[in-house]
Image (cartoon, rainbow, N blue to C red; front, top):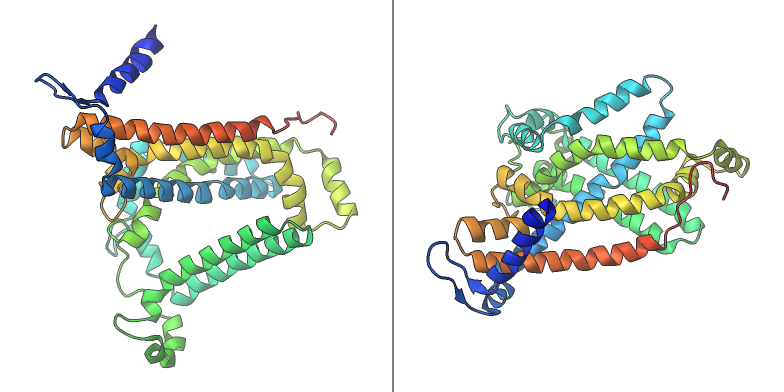
Length: 352
């Protein structure tokens, strides 16, 4: 009864609102599919959908691999495992809005901001070095996959490495190249500029090139600990015989991760992938509303619906947009569940 009252009744009422020019006090007129047409031909709506997709891809790329990497590292720590697990899990016990407000203080666009205080001390060569290290790690994984004839996966790792290198290069570019200056003019001073530090603090939440990433990082920071513990529990279920067999075959550390660890946690990774994708479309609304309010090209689909309904009081188009968003997510979920249905699950003690 409670579920029907708070879930299905609002759902049915929303279905009616989507085909009405809904008014709070005056009688609501029936408009048919006009609300859907208004949203469908609204450029701002499609820009918001694109931003939601961009936000979701950033969440998946930044929250999918780091917990796995962290779980592998925690498994290899010889001492203090309980202490490290507690430290990494602590951000998850903080309320979501507190996390967002805390990171908003970190992003303060001045030298007093915590993040800028660190970034302003890193020279341009430091940013490039980080990018080169990440690129090298990605290429090392890609090479092992290529030897196993996994071509597409290998190219995906190379692409990830290139993206990391480009991102680090964009952080170093304002130091290496002054406004209005060409690379030919900057080349004679390149050696000294590689050791130079940023001259101005980064405006994380007002710069369109960094605002969306800045909105994703708090979610990554808060979710890495719980995800890491889940993967760590799965890693503890891998029999030691697998690692011993890999050692006898001359497998490297990368080979063990690719062909022992990842196949074992693949079902769990698929479940987390589906959940993270759905959650990123809904969780982005509140986080971005607090962080940027939709500015700097960060307005997502949920925020578009919120502004339509509660700022402009256009409840009909807002409900139509919500139905369109829900339809897109339902289609993706059904597709992922079909993939999940073909995955085989085994307990830790089951023979394969």
